[in-house]
Length: 231
Length: 277
Image (tube, rainbow over all chains, first blue to last red; front, side, top):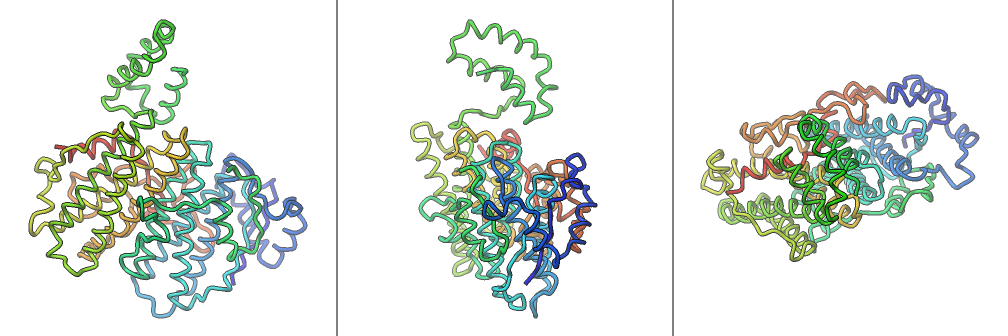
């Protein structure tokens, strides 16, 4: 299991002007570490009373929703790349490292864009994944990538800002490229399948935030509150 | 409808709009007065005429016009794969390749059918295509040209991804249509990923399922427009390359791969027009 806990409530170090160049906050997060994160979270999060970390409303809520998913994906691939499954080919090592970097880039972009409105770092639960086993890793990767695509597609029409829609669009097609690759590594030729694409019209099957979190919840210990998201 | 607001919106989409339209700005300002004298229904036409002179090819604002643009791209892909599957069915018989090309062909035909069903009588007719782009490329369906066929397939899929992405902001007024367009967009990206894997297996060993920088790889230079603008390292004001966190440093290559960039209407149209006879 990977612990990825930290706290985000120190608004003083969040600087919307410098956006990503927020080293003090990040260092602070690293310092916070796994051991203290949970306790501090419980004591400082105003969202706990409302039933979990509140993603917020409007476009901020949708961006936090994307940020949560990217956190999940990034944490997964970081763990994968820390200790690749035995017997991994050079090709798969290279591809999975690329994907890790893409997901970290997505995560960091949302974190910077959201600045002080960003939700905290989530605690993930990867206890169901056997990182030493190729099928377990690729099977989870497939689930995450397909889920990410369906989530972005479902969230796109909920956005008010055209700029954010474009940003989401820039990311979702890369997630779809990942998804197709992982599916093909598991079984060549399955880059589209009836589980992800409506065979009657060739359209991807999108998912609402509640549908997505019902699936992603297995891998996230931190409870997420989506009640204020637009629908 | 507020004309000045529309111009402002276009400026946000196209920063160069001012430069192009500049000699005509006075004419637009005059039109705001003139507008009172025009019947409301005539206004879009008047605006369209003015913008045509500025752009040559204008970003449509009507949902149906955007859907017809998408339909044209889908016609192109559908015919391309339909002819490709026919041309290579013997050569590739029994291989995963022909299976994949058939799957993609079927998806593109479904996209055509879907868009036609949405547009109903407003749907444009299928153009006549020339997949040599008037002799720029060898005939992709001729014996021995399977490599050309796959190279064009990659260019078409990557163009499709970028074109749908560019149109999404113009579909925001209709969430149903926007949702459908996004659900086609990601399927095109899945196709692009697979075609790139097929080309890698054919010997283009450096090729990845995602786009690195603005590299067209081994595709002929005539297709460079498909990849121009993909080299961005900064997103929403955030420099992605050089980010270093959790023991991961984002390289320039990874920063560009992590985000697919949109094509404007005219950029995508210019690519598609190469293949319209």
